[in-house]
Length: 295
DNA sequence: AAAAGCCCCTGGACGC
DNA sequence: TGCGTCCAGGGGCTTT
Image (cartoon, rainbow, N blue to C red; front, side, top):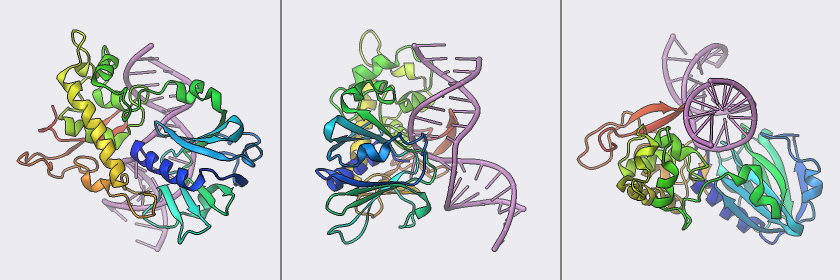
């Protein structure tokens, strides 16, 4: 599933394809994705212009003319394909499989834009969703209001994270995965950031918390590693595991830089470590880590 | 309030 | 080849 870097790359691709264009038609091929599609979905969207495409955590936010916003989430397997006018081939944004072509049976929503561009949303598992909201109520939207700090924003600091971790009874891994604490991290990048920071995933979240009003050395180490892993992933075009491809349709390359994720029983890549990557399950999800490097 | 399960859904990988 | 089992990048919702 797409995490922050992948969603950000989708955002950029959508903005390039949609910005300034008008939605002139919309095909809704089923009543629901994860949630029922909004009533009057097509009627609300048709005729509006796309002013910009934003991202908050793993959500995509289309700002439309006349104060309307479209909230979208890719879930695990959502992807967009951009086709049309002046392009040599289709541009695939987000979750694709290694097969270039998505199964058209899972093409759920098709946007027709002015200028002849078509944007098709495909999502086999249908964990993704689309919702409408008034632009000026977005901050208060129930799905967005509780989200934590953007890890690539200036307000993401060791002080803030350490304060947030104070008194928590949960594992550090689960704490970082919780979107209310840090918005946009997923299973891959949490594992990768913890490895880079040398922190064991099972250690208690409170062990990075503020002590005597100051963030611990662990928090000071962790925050820049989170930022670095996300920034590098965006620069590399996101991770490709089963089904993610970057904007030009080629595979993202970041999985080649994974130090731990999906590397169970393989040697630790840190020089002179000699350890073996382990897989454990935390709150029902796989965690990969190096027991030697991460304490 | 916070933490831990459960569930939504399809498809790919693997073992037999 | 076919079938059963397990697993998957998310997150909302319910229960403890």
